Each structure stands twice: as C-alpha cells, then as structure tokens.
Amino acid sequence: DATLPDKWIDSDSSLFRENFERKSFEVAHHLAGHPLFQLPQLMGLAERTLKTRPFDLYYDMGNVAPGQKWRDTNRAFSPLNALTQLEESDAWFIFRSAQRDPLYTELYRQAMEEVKDLVGRHIEPQISREDIIIFVTSPKRVTAYHIDRECNFILQLQGEKDLYVFDRQDRQILPEEEIEEFWAVDNNAPNYRPELQDRARLYKLAPGNGVHVPVNCPHWLKNADNISEIGRAHV
Image 1: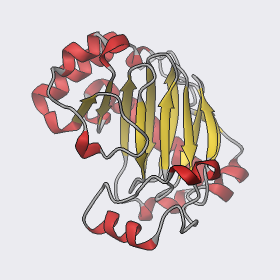
Image 2 (image 1 turned 90 degrees about the horizontal axis):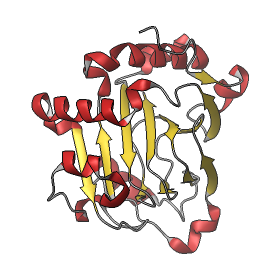
Image 3 (image 1 turned 90 degrees about the vertical axis):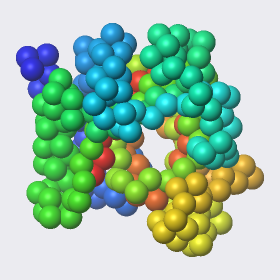
C-alpha cells in the first residue's frame, strides 16, 4: 500500500530494549490520519467482520465506571447504527485481529517487523501470538480497569485520551490471588481500588503518540470529549 508510512514507531532503541515488557513507556508513531483508520473504512471493516468472523467484533454501550466489569455492559443494540452515531451512542468497539482483513494485512506485517527489530530478533521464538486490534470509542467513554495477557503497544490515532497505568509489582494494587484467578478462570478478576488511584502513571494520549503496556500491568482509560481511535499491536 503506497499510503503506508515508511515507519510506524519512533523510539530510542536502547531505551526500548531496556524497558520492553518490564515497565510502561511512551513512543511516537506515524499512523495518525491514515485512511484505513477513518470512519468510512472502519464501517466497511465492521460490515465485513460481522459477516465473516463476528466474534472478532466486540461492542458495548453505556456509562462505564473504572471499576465496572465487562460482563455488566449492554450489548443489546445494532453495532453499525452505533458506529454511525458515535458522538451520542456512548459506545466502545474492539476490532480484533484486524490483520485478517486483506486491507489491513500489510499494515500488520510492517508493524510486527518494526517491533521485532526494536526489541531484537531473539524475541521471535518467545512469541505465541501476534495481533492488531483497533478500538473506537465515543466521547468521554471509559475503558474499565483491567490487565491483559498480551504485551501491548497502544497507539493513539484520533482524539485525546487519558491512560492510567499501575505498577504490576505492587501487591496492594494487584494481589497474587487476583493474578492467579485472572490467568486460570476469570478475565474480570483484577479489582480497581480507587483509594490507590494516585499510584497510577498518567499518559496523555493524542494523535501521534502511544504507550507500551507490559503483560499484567493494570490500566484504565478515559476518553476526552471527542471520538477516539486507538490501534493496539500486541505480541
């Protein structure tokens, strides 16, 4: 695709390797404004995903608090209608495995090659899965507190958003039993503790920047008064 940027991510390579999968850090990127992340293209992606692999499109709607569990959200609505009314729909969309769509395959390939080059090719035997995920959220929408099984790069494409990342080594924030329950049985196991909110590191996301979030690092996000799009590459 001739419209692909020559480079996805800007980061000091030594700093990148020192901190990768150890602690969160900020990166710059060149994907903001790319045509594949504009709403008409995302509508097409949603339509194709719903037809061919509907489990790869997650969506919910409603006023979400940081400590709310994902199982408690509303999915009784038309996702395509909500996408066309993002300003008012209070919705959240996850396009999982976007690289399975032919329009996004080359974007995915380039992203993963850059990450591997930055980390070092020794990482390749340790990778069990690679993925590109696109998040689209309505104004002021909250993404609830959670941890991930994947090592992530969260890249802000449109709008502004606050990302709060906690220390995964702090056992007051993330007790051992919650880690064990998360990995064994329940994605909703980690519990948000508002009295410990001041221990989070705040990242101000805007188009062109992003954050590396290691496995098990608790985090939550709050959208500004705008539609937000995030691309997430994970390994």
